[in-house]
Every structure is written in C-alpha cells, then in structure tokens.
Image (cartoon, rainbow, N blue to C red; front, side, top):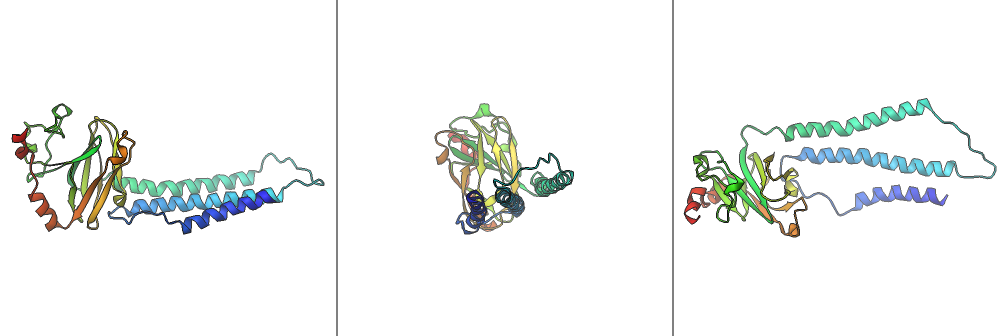
Length: 265
C-alpha cells in the first residue's frame, strides 16, 4: 500500500512541479516558434505516458499485492493487449516524429532573400564577417590565419576586400530580415547559441555548417557556446544586437572592411 501511494505522489508531484516551476524558456525573438511548439508536443505526449505508466504501476502494486489466500495465475500472453500496445506506441511515435520532420524541412530550407553572415568560433571568442556592398563573402583558408587576420581571409580574393570584419565585438543585425549564418571553428568544436533565437548548430573544424533565422524583435541578446570547448568555455560569451534597418545601417557604416584593415597587417 505504501509503495502504491508513493508512486501516486511521484506522478502528482511531477505534474505540480511542472506547473509551479519558475524555469521556462526565455521569450522568443525569432521566427522559430515551430521549435517551441514541437518541443511542447513531445513534452505533452511523453508527460501523459509517464503519468499513465506511473499510475498503472501504482494500480498493479495495489491490485495485485500479496495476500496469504491468493495465488498468482500464469498467463504468458495476451494478444489483444499486445495489439493495443503496438498500435498506441506507433501512433505516439508518429505524433512525436512528424512535427519534428516538418520543422527540420523548414530548418534546412534557407529563403532565397536571406543575407549571409559568417561566424567564427575560437577559444574563447567570437568573430563575425558580413558581406560588403557586392553582397558576397570572399574565400578564406586556415593557412591565412594570423593575429592580424584572425578569420583567415584570402587577401587575393576581390570578393573579400569589402567584407566587414567584426572581431571580438557585438554582432549587429536588422530586424525582420532573414539571415543565413555560416559557421566555422578554427580549433575545437563550438556551438553558437542565442536562447531567444532557438535555432543553433555545431561549429566543426574543417567544415562550414549553417542555420538560418529571422529576428522578430529588437534588443540585445547574449551569445553562449553550447559545446564544452575547454577550460574557458563558460567565458565564451558575446552579444547580438537586433536593430531597426536605419540603426543597423548607421552601425554598418562605421565598421571597417577587410581592405581597410590590410595596412595594419
């Protein structure tokens, strides 16, 4: 009896803790509300199943508790129950997978009008590159990386001469404009993560990964590294500033291009 009561308290306590918990997502600031909705669908499905299993266990513990005058009956199979469990499990799996596949299809399909922005992770700092007036990013190579060229840009590529380089400072982006984020790491695994944007992706040395999002509100948002990248991992912080188009253009006009940085190299 005591065990059954404990199981019921575990189920009830879990539900109560969820509704009274002070921890929740930060307010969203991007177009990826679908990610929140997918997580909620998965949470409710798994939560209902968790509570149902715990309560069923409590029922079984109480209903089939030991009594001196009772003997267990051996029934090795129940075809009807097995079919119901198989169908219910299949429906639950489909209900959890289908929304995720729908969101993933959108996640990997970048809008044609998205602006490319490169983010480079390095222990323990963030650097950024934005296209110049030509709208194209130049090439880069790790062999070009130096203290004066931390992003490894190709000095002989004309497409890269007007690229805007922001090294170790805040990244500014305009609101309501889709952005394709190109991700590079020059040493170990990193992960560019802004909780309010929801979307994120690993940065893998030797590869260029990507994700995209559309900022939906202005503000300053903290950047975290979501990979354990070394002893200074907790200090790998940054900021993304989402501005109106006019404010963004004013900031962009005050930045220096790669060609303007060359004399200092």
